[in-house]
Image (cartoon, rainbow, N blue to C red; front, top):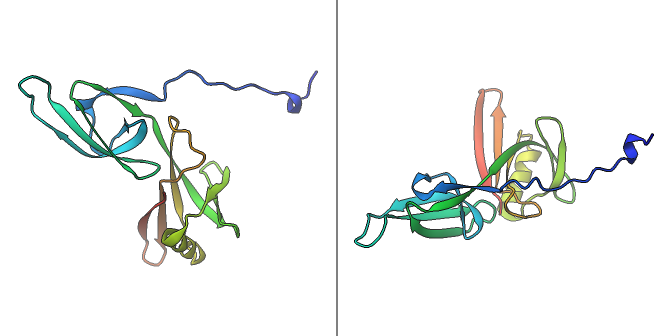
Length: 175
């Protein structure tokens, strides 16, 4: 009988879709949509009236959830658009290594150490907040339709002041 450690299981794609269709008129601001094959958060949306020879049109403006680039599209209101499955996971920042990698802990205690601290003012502020003893919560969005190594959209820092029992929340965007 083989040891469990020697067993190797193959994994594969389940064949499930990474997006689902939704009618353009049913999309809403702050929702998600695929624009130019990129997962975007809808920041502006306007509808034009039905013309003499056509349907009502919807003008969508979205921000790529990984690169923060702006994308636009115009489509008939009855047209189906692809909506990505977007998931966000929260981690507690437990350490910042000397080589600049974040040590993050999930709710289940699992550690993640593959994200590098951002360059520039954001990284400096994040390091200063950590070194001053603030409790920092990092939110990482993921989207299975985009093949990226590691992307962080937003680091949400929550610092709790015990003496005043208030929670201060600061958003940092990472590109």
